[in-house]
Amino acid sequence: MFPAELRPDATGLAFVGGVLDVATIEAAYARGLFPWRGGVDIPWYLPDPRAVLPVGGFRASRSLAKLRDAGGFEVAFDRDVVGVQRRCATTARRHEDATWISPDMMAVYAELVARGIAHGVEILRDGVPVGGLYGLAFGRFFHGESMYYVERDASKLALWALSTALAARDFELIDCQVPTAHLTSLGVETWPSTRYLARLAANRDVPSRHGSWATWTPAW
Image (cartoon, rainbow, N blue to C red; front, side, top):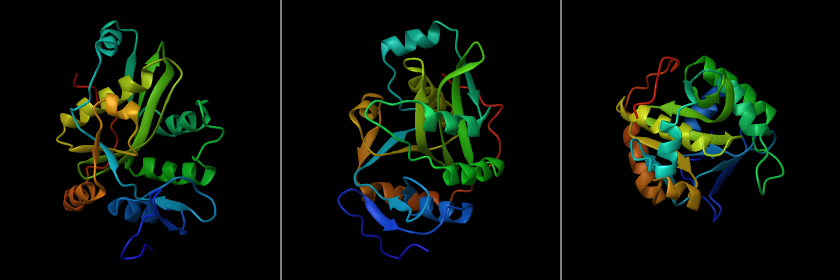
C-alpha cells in the first residue's frame, strides 16, 4: 500500500490514505510509519529526528524513585489494554482540545490486543488506574503510542516499569516517536531518522513473541 520511497515533509507527514486494519498497521510500523488519527484520509508520519529510549535507559529522578519506594502503587501489565487506550483518549491534557485516538483506531487496537501485539502498562492506587501507556511490540521494539495520568508522575512510573521489564527480556528500543523536552528529561534520545530506520530494518528479522504480558512485573 505504501510507496517504495517515502518522502516525508517538514512535519514528518509521509503518506495520506489507506485503511486502519491489522495488516496495514503491521506494514506501516515495519517502515517506521505511524498514524495520527483514523477516519478518512489517514495521515501516516515518519518524523526526523526520532525519539527513542534504549530499554533500561530510563532516567529516574530522585523524587520519582522516592515515589516508587514509598509504595501504595501497583504496576499492571496487560490488565486492560483497551481501557488504557480509552483513558489516553479521554483524559484531559493541557494545550489539547481533542484526541487523535478515533473510534476506528480503537477498534483495530482491540484486534491487536487479541493477537498479543498491543500491550498496556498501568499504575494503580487502591485498584484504581491513575496513569499508564500503551503501544505495539514487534521483534525487540516497543512502539509507544500514548500515555496518560490523573495522578502526578504516574505515567513516568509506567514508562520506567516498562523499560526495566523490556530490558529483562532482551528488548532493544522503545520508540517514542517525536522528541520533546519532557521525554529527553526521562532519558529518551534523539536519533536521525536514518539511524532509527537502520535499526528498524535489522529488527524485522527478529521473531516477535506475541502474547499476553499479564504475568510481567517491573525489574526495578
